[in-house]
Image (cartoon, helix red, strand yellow):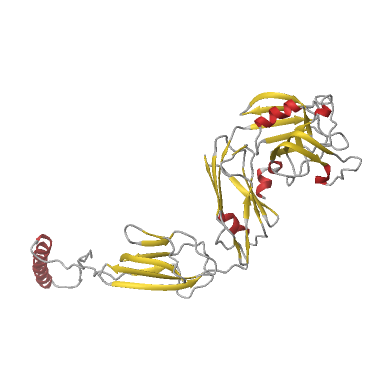
Length: 404
């Protein structure tokens, strides 16, 4: 609506005679009366017709997310159509050889989108029809080609689907080749937790990125990982081979603390101490590194072989020994395992080549309680500091260091 404001101007003139002034006063009075009558008629009348503006119906206006002739389109990117001043009546995306891409049209007809990724190096034609508010029908068509990768990489995840893990479990993504655009890779790795859990990524080289929570996971947390790398440009023409997805649950909080001076391991579950076990750790010539480890794998029947971490079996400190129970804590060969040969030293002396020795009975009990992702801390061992890159030892870095 347009509002009009009436402006009344009052003029004062000096030097006029009394008679002239009276005449002008009479004239002004007449004007005022006439003006007053006119104003009353305008404001009080209901029979007159007011000027109105009716906007004419508009033709449909389509917005396609791809233009005719586009190439190098990311296969993962949804192809979309939106319309203003109308509704979409038909839309389809058809491959060069007749493949129909799955799609979805919004119930009110205002938008349309594809619902599945496209192929690499493929040509598609998008056809859209719409009817405008003015009743006129329009159509548009766009033919485009998706990207052809210069190279592809696959990604693996260290957590298994439906697994129950420990509260220290890091999420490790290993690519089969270098990733030029690390931000794009992180954006493609979606991690959803209930309850919500704060965490962040950290790269270790060009092929491995690890996500860990700021603090230990809360027991009972449900986590879903969607590594949506297929069709995503990871930089310099590098694309993912296929997506990966994993759902897992965080179990009870098991924390074990191995003390090299009193030769014991204290085991707590959900904050309650449940058992203290006698142990033997690395002897002075091969002390166990001190720090916080994370359980990596568990083995019923395992051959401990010094050559796996660079010490020949036939050397003075080499060995090749079968054990009934063994749980890996690092890449460098630190395990907790059954060691019946050191039973007399367990609880008294450190005599191992670096591993944590337990009786067969205690190793079986502990392995029955632990799971991948549980937290093991070694203290007062006399050994060097555990390297954060040795196995899954991400808790060796503070949160500030992790984000640096």
